Length: 116
Length: 109
Image (tube, rainbow over all chains, first blue to last red; front, side, top):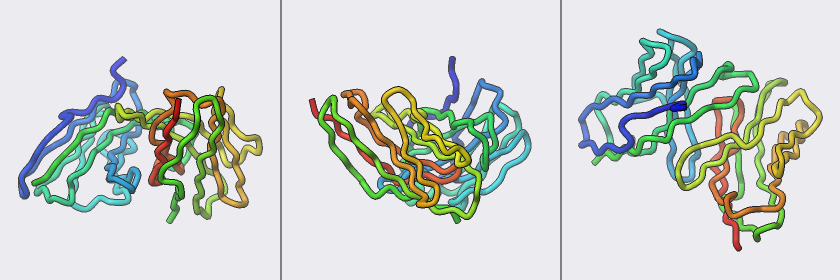
């Protein structure tokens, strides 16, 4: 079972460049999320989606955009990358609601992004 | 806003012994879920255990158990009979939104 798949796994960007991270899940989950993980700060929620065509801001949304055109895919975009966006990005999905529900998060393997 | 605090950046335990990882949180909600996730060096996050705030009974999953103190807003993870494979980063989470900063667990043979 593939579960949650993120591409690419690694990427190096120059300041000001743009890029898109793709997340795909094959579990038919309604809810999807993007987090960033920085040393000493745990995971912080960037954006999330409660269904196809709907997205919402998380704790640290500035500098990122997202789209959920298909239920199985959740894209994270950086329009003009900055060194502060150097991080490991995790996509996750769940069958239960973000703000309640016993269902856990199913995570991808992470994407390491370096912005020079 | 809800916050999750893990005050132990790093801990060590001898193989076969017991260790407890601490987590506190802040919320004004009455019903919520708390989770512990494990992140080994492979970076893949996996669920260890979950607890619903309405349930008085502490959750248990094999060697993993929690001490949930709702009034104190405390949610600690106890690992019994520690194994080398338990070495990882452990994150406490409130619902899907908020994570603690993590505790790195070292297991000594």
